[in-house]
Image (cartoon, rainbow, N blue to C red; front, side, top):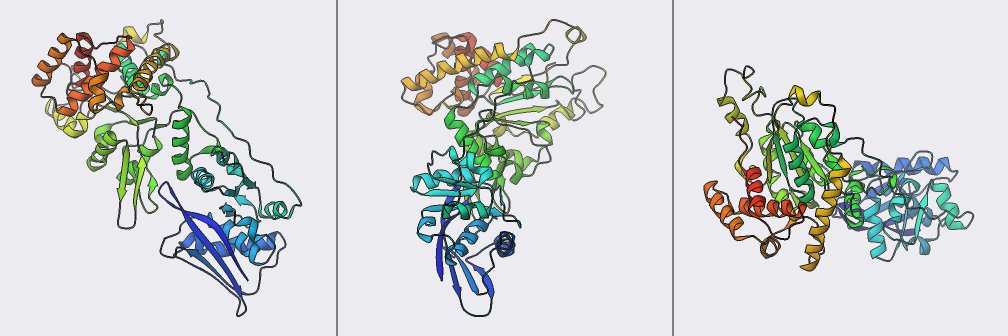
Length: 506
């Protein structure tokens, strides 16, 4: 008695075909799983045995061998449970082999026969759609799978319902697509007193998706500003939402199978390790920078992060992806995120504040700020000083602009950018931060006096080629916010002001 079931294995975000082969023969009862299974898969036989007993099916007293082909590929995860159970049921002629071979099967079994949530259903459903196959998955992930466009999805709450469905006793309904409701953002820029220059910088960063560093003493409002960035960012486009949801599905952070159009906001603690930030570890999971794909990565207390961890950000900040290479695997994850960072000017935090500086000032400030390497600073478009809030600002009753007002300007600027990219035939580009090469020269139409100012200060500030190009992108965004077709001298001047190496104002 033999059977074959189509299932999958994950390699990063890639979904690989696995041919699960079942053989039942006479002999001393045994249950073996071969084909490089990990510990989780090796334990599947106990979960499958318990699930059979829970629904009243006698486990066959035969010699059972499960082979996961290709045998040289390491298999990991509890999602093989359902495929193993279906293979046994086909070999026992309880389920129709010829019908199940048209599906990709994955799911974790509970001891009572229920199907429990697993990671990665969305990319598997997309692969099933591409391969013209159906999908069998747990009921909890049915709505997630429905976003793939697949028309043949069987989302079962338990093993018994699945058996009854294929026997024609009952019909499992096609899952509905779910979208997480966009809740009104309770964080508003109007809550922040003063800090008009920092708010202006935040608006520019939102309009062009530029990286930004805020430096200032404790309590100045740096974290408050960063937390309100998402309130002035437009929602994800459908393509961006699907890209982000695929990563979140594999990482197991996609809630209730709902497609989320809110931009991700990740804020890891400064004690985070390099694998936690960029991805990796034993199972090569996506890191914080990939979970922040198409969204915001906020790094508070930037110099307190491990130096090697920060240096690992340099490549993804340029390429929008991270390649993780180890002896056992090589994976590439998307990592197109907007970096927002904050730091104190020195370890005590009060450099430049009369009567509050520590005895080591100003040397302590130079040592503290030197923890951020030049190459990393070169990739940050906006450097802004956030001064202490004055008592007059704190007691001021009049509020500043709301996030909704700023958002309207950001949306208008992004619309200008999108239309410009479409004229150039670049439909995949969305913001000025993605401009490069000849496209950058075509998009940035400099007035003669603006060009001369940029050349003079690029030489004076010793800007690198990267710094020169990032200044152009930033100036283009500033001009877009003012609905200017050409980049003028004042746009270049403001961009150069943000590009300077951050030092404490005297």
